[in-house]
Every structure is written in structure tokens, then in C-alpha cells.
Image (cartoon, rainbow, N blue to C red; front, top):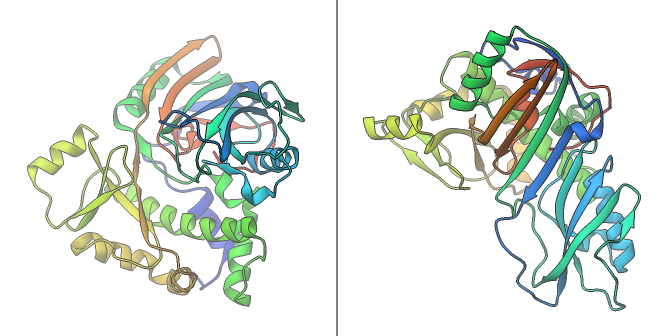
Length: 356
């Protein structure tokens, strides 16, 4: 692999290894937007403040940034002043939260409708909503034209529900047809990021996602994606925190089995990482990406960690003929498509290029 090779990166980013032996059948995902429902959960109630308005918005076939721009226009503010916790799929029906600075002229937010969105509720809030400020997302997915042996599908559904799947960044993170990978290569070659804040953020996040998927894919291949190595940075389930386990003992192994903790992979930047065997493995896997890791440090990004394992909660699955309906909850930043790919190979009639 060369220092900047988008073609080689495509397999690492877009087609990483399966953990459970590959899909057991085929199906159609997103035959319509209504087949992909997402409900964002904040984990807190509006505080009644006066500086901002907290809006609960339902959008259909619109991306989050486009809706944020329209809300900004209605409030008479800049798009950068609109807050939201995360990007949601465009080809979906998604209910998510936004904040806008309180307009000088009153706006009747509740019930307001725009192209592809409507405001469900509004309340006072003291502060701008920040990225990642949510407790999770609830999904209801409908897969149609499913062709899979019932016994095999039932067994795979049970395995996914009980043991989880690799927590890959989905192809949405890498842009339409992997275009963000080309942008990363251009950045390495030219030394310049896009000027706009969002364009810059997309390139930086795609770069870190590529590196994470590379490490996770290798650990899927060697069977260590769901167990701890000595020196592992260990994630506490449901929290954005981790600790280094110098040695893995029986207590930690038991906590892994009950999903209380998870192994992690790198989101490179400045700062400490794993030790021991885990550090040696990551160093070897990221060595071909030394220039990219160096660029991320130069941009001042702080190193972080992401769980390698994704375990759904509040899980239910039902099948009626050739239609499979899945309902589950995932933590912030997790991709529903990472779960589906371990079940079925899916066709997606409607084009998609936004984050979960």
C-alpha cells in the first residue's frame, strides 16, 4: 500500500471483513424512506432557558445540514449557530433535535413545516446543542424481498442480538462512492483541507474512520474484535470513557462476556493510547498510515477511542413472508448498517450519502 492510495483504502473502509461468516441471505433496505426510521434520544429534558430554542424535528429525505440551514434562515441566524447532536440519514424518516438562538422576532415553531421536515415540538434551552450530546438512537428497519433460509436467519438474528457485531463506520462516512477517500488523498498530497468548516470536518472524520476500520478489520480477521488484549484501552459500555488494562484477568473477561466493557480501536490524534500487546498491534497496523496520522496530529485533534464491538439493546425481530422488521437501540455514533450487513446482503434502491 502506498502512502495515499484511495483504491486500496476502499476495501478497508467500504468492504471490511465479516465477523459471522458473511450474510445468510439477501434483502432490500430502504425501498422507501419509511422503511428506515430513526428516533434520536437526548437523555435529558429541556431546561427552559431563554438563549436558545430546542426543536424536535421530523425530516424525510432531507439531510441534517440542509434542515439546519433552513432553520437558520427561519430564525434569522447563521447556519453555524444551529446546533444538533448528530447527522442522520437522508433516505429515512428521522426524528432529531436542533437548537437555534432565540429569534428577535417570535417564531411559531411548533407545527412549522418546510421542504421535507416539520417541527414536532419546541422548548426553551440555555445552551447550543453540541455534537454527540445524545444518549442513543432507536431504529425500526423494514427489509423487503428477503431470501434467506428461516433457520439460518433465525440463528444469525440470535447471534447478533446476543453477541453484537463489529462497530464499523458505515460507508456513509466515506461519501458517495467513497469520494471522501479521494479528498483524504488530496489533503495528503496538497497539504490543504477544504476551507469550509463542514468540508474540513468531513475529511478529518473520514480519515479517522478509515484508520479505525483498518484496525477493527484486522481484529475481526484474527478473532480479537470482541475480546481484550493486554494493554487494551477498555471502553465502559454506554459511556464515552475508557481505561488502560495492563493485564486481562478473569474479572475483566467476565465483564466482556456480559457486555459491561468492550475493546476499543483508535481515532488517532494527539494523546495516549494502548500499551503492551494492544499497542504493538495498532502500531503495526497503522505504520502504513504514518503520514496520515501525523497530519491528524498537526491539525490538533485529540486522540480518542471507539468501541470495537456494537451490541444492540431493546432488540426485536419479526418476519412476515419476505418482510423482516427489526427494532433496536444503538449508542451514539453507531451505524445500523453495520448490524444489517452481518445479516443480509442488501440492495438499496434509493441513493444514500449521509451519516447514520
